[in-house]
Length: 494
Image 1 (tube, rainbow, N blue to C red):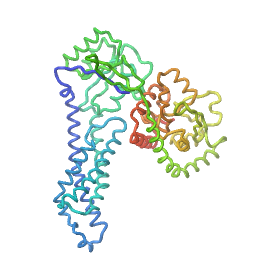
Image 2: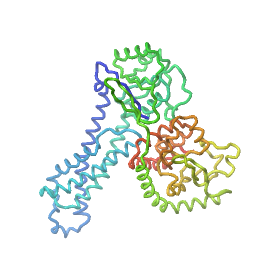
Image 3: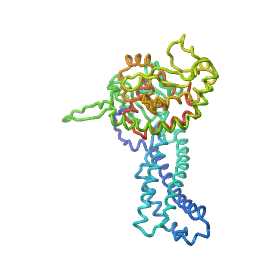
Image 4: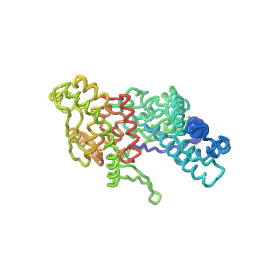
């Protein structure tokens, strides 16, 4: 969910306060541009070698008027300029955030490289001084892409190391331990490139529950009335107020203290927690108003998403069929019971369907417990092969057929069992908004916590609604790629 902040202006401008973080971002942006200049130049030299040294015999040299590398070196400055210009247009040098930031950057590299190649081809017709070998230009595209991806990955690792050691980041304290306060702290922990180092929270109460990523990092620094002592002893440089029941006099004291001590200060709008959609601001003859844009998912989006699923899932079924056959035999001969486990789940518009996966549990595993969530290691309930299937997520492969049939999508909110769906729809406002799209094999919530979010329906709902509001084919593709990476690393699987 987006965090809506109101700005408090100090004598020193926000730009001055953020100088250290901006300086680091600026340095690494310049480093990337310098790297890209070298990478593009190197890619054309490699492309030249591929065309005139590796792929043709030396006796054929006289047949190629563009064979001499000097012709390329003389115009290398122009080629580099075209590529750097294309990268700027593609947004490569902006700051990316979130769990998909690396994929966003790779996408920008790809778009910029394709655009630069098209521009270069165009220039060969308009400017005769450019070498006319189309092969060199074409070969430069994959060469540059590989070099740029590897070099940007390395630069990002260095930047992450710098930011993880809180070089240039402000020490930040959160006032309040409600859902919004915890979300801010969680974002700081996940994305140090936001410029803040979470050092603890101030609250008069102890939170009943902590968000997944905050569980091992939450620190209670004291009560709100001790804020001066806490700020002075911790050396905090930023304060986020995420509580709406604070005494007005106390709030004024905090604002005045922050102003006099140049403390970066932000307020969250906690009195209006809109969970039905995103907010927008309007003005009615000087009266500030807050509007709500309700969540929707147009029919043509559904059609495009469905078409995308079919195009992707058919090749996936063909490729994984031998694996599924082997796994089916292992399940069959490893324990008593059916190969597939079938369960009723809820999908788009509340429709029920048979959700299938390879059976990983003993057939009587839920006879005593009834419907439960898998929140701990399931060795006692799973077969030996079943435990492996769960840890590797291979038990999910049959759901490709759920996707092909139209019951599920490759990406979307994870479909719930009727028991839990009915329970949450009564307890949680707007829970049914998840049903605007088909349930997914993976989703935005899964890559932000996977099994750990299973018993956190409010957090899961926030991620699901964000996904629906911000859906795109590229978003789906990035989530699928990130899911593959998480599965390989066995992240948070029970």
